[in-house]
Length: 149
Image 1 (cartoon, one colour):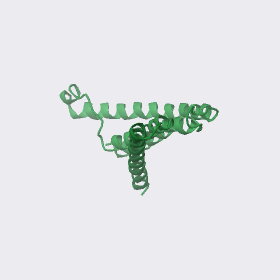
Image 2 (cartoon, rainbow, N blue to C red; image 1 turned 90 degrees about the horizontal axis):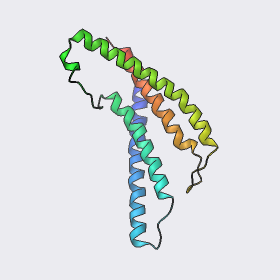
Image 3 (cartoon, rainbow, N blue to C red; image 1 turned 90 degrees about the vertical axis):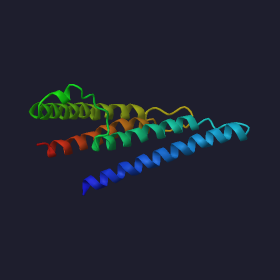
Image 4 (cartoon, rainbow, N blue to C red; image 1 turned 45 degrees about the vertical axis):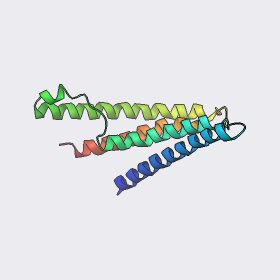
């Protein structure tokens, strides 16, 4: 149940962020060609939407094993070694993202005091994408470890 909710949240977030990114870029293009001046905030907004699109999509890619693997050496070892390597990779990656999630909280706190130049929006919004990425990656890593045999 929770797996479906998280997956749907990530899919919706990815789709929404990409759609808004495209709309912002199209607005910028339209304004440059057909209006006297382009809005100054579109670059910042498009960057923010891009960051969140990557944040949501990266967790989905990990869930579905869509990341690129360098498996030349991996394919030459037996299944027992492969299982051990997979377990080590999952555990080290989980540790990395756990550390990242704790560190990201500090970034978000620092970002609360900062304002973006064009929009004047709290930078904690942008920095929280790091925390969200780490949390979603940890969630899917724990899922993979629970299914690990």
